[in-house]
Image (cartoon, rainbow, N blue to C red; front, top):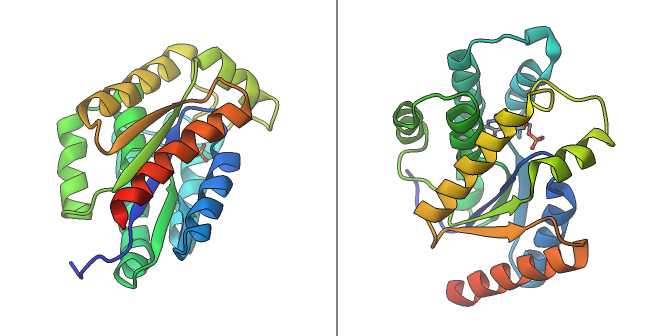
Amino acid sequence: MNEIKGKFITVEGGEGAGKSTNLDMIKQVLERAGHPVLYTREPGGTPLGEAVRDLLLVHKHDGMADETELLLMFGARAEHLNRKIVPALTAGTWVLCDRFTDATYAYQGGGRGIDPKRIQVLEQWVQQELRPDLTLILDLPIEVGLARAEKRSTPDRFESEAHHFFQKVREAYLDIAKNSPKRVKVIDASLPLAQVQSQIKTVIDDFLAVCI
Ligand code: TMP
């Protein structure tokens, strides 16, 4: 893999956690600190990835096999890494990504019950040594998140899952944070926006301080 010069930051969370608003704010904070930022998302981020995203989210494919879902996530990710993320990081651009492989551990691992060891094999194969430098998990109780998400639009294939699915997703995210405390920071996203953003600002400022 080429030499990586930029930093790779990912933002995760359950449904209705407020990722979009907070991603905009993080992008501004990083740019104000003088870093060029590529803002992207998963599944998606490339024309092929966005086409795969459509396949993954539409109800036409309700009942898709769990393995198919997992492989499509990594198919889109391979394209995203090769065409967008790695070239940007190599050029010294920072990459801010709305979800990445932690979402696979949470949704396909926790939610669907796929053995994390199988996810690990794909992670190593597709990403080699590349892992995010910093991950923020916007955490909030399932009921609060789903109530927020429901107000927005017709639920997609994931948003239509049952309550216990999201409970397992949340637990898997919190496990990831417990196991990687240096990289992964949990933000209490149930608080009012100003307080959520102040927690995020502290995490980003601490990260920037050690990057200098
Ligand atoms: P979004 O809600 O952030 O737009 O993401 C779309 C959905 O895709 C969301 O419900 C979570 C799901 N997802 C996975 O199940 N596995 C993954 O690896 C990623 C990146 C997303």
